[in-house]
Amino acid sequence: MTTPSAPLASALEWLGQTKALNHKKVMITGASYGVLGTLRAQEHLRRILQSPNLAASTLAGEEFFLRRAAQAFDEEGNLKDTQVVAQLDQYFADFVSWVKD
Image (cartoon, rainbow, N blue to C red):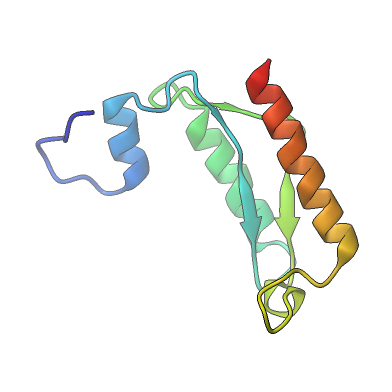
């Protein structure tokens, strides 16, 4: 991988110049303190990743949003809600299956 010669504004800009994500499969996850923060961020990130400069593939129709992240973990850093754990496990399993295809 090459290093760009001019300073760049972000890692995404650098990835666009290096073509490192072209036709690569990527997964987007997120967590937010509120209800919608990660939802909006993931929508924007998906559009950016699918732009011609980056040309990454994102798993359509699959998203993982962890809302109220500050309350979602126990003292040891584990997710407290077993349904959320199952949802995240399924999301990763779907992604691995998609990558292998």
